[in-house]
Length: 220
Image (cartoon, rainbow, N blue to C red; front, side, top):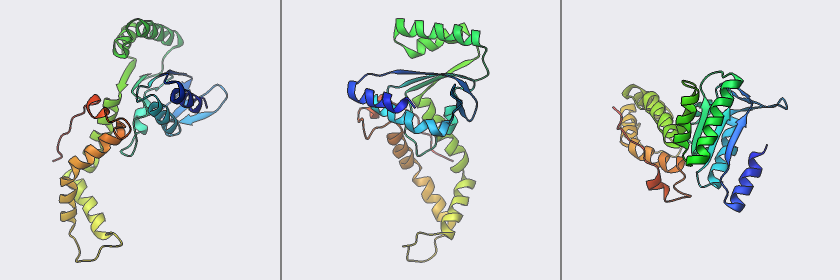
């Protein structure tokens, strides 16, 4: 795979590539001309390494059906695999791809703005392509976690599991599930900040504390 070579080059030269991937794709991953197939989970690690090498400035353009599906491979333990992702949300005819990407790259070279370039792309081929910034990816993952794991009902269920399986080194009276559930609610903001710092590589690039802003909303 070319990604390790690009990562090594970016680490050595400081160059920031625009990674354009052109192949067949679906919700599970990408199929290449040599017959190989890479799942989005397979690609996540190498992309993250390249993104780190570029100082979190990696723009990935996927010219494949369902090219934005990488979004759904991300979880709360992941670092950002890219700065921005451009891809189609449906099957796209070759002539539409050509028209869209000509508009994208002509505008990108002229303006040096990914957002302006994506606007030109969408104008050339409406209702087909999306731009997912790293902040959007973070918010998507976090909001899904909040909606599925941080409701009162979900926290109580997690509390029951924690009460039934306390840490092996715990010595003391049994802890009620409601106590664990309350603790989870109290730790939510702390968990958010830990995840934010990891996702946006703040431990590697302290300036990212102010470079990337995302919203926090307390759970119910």
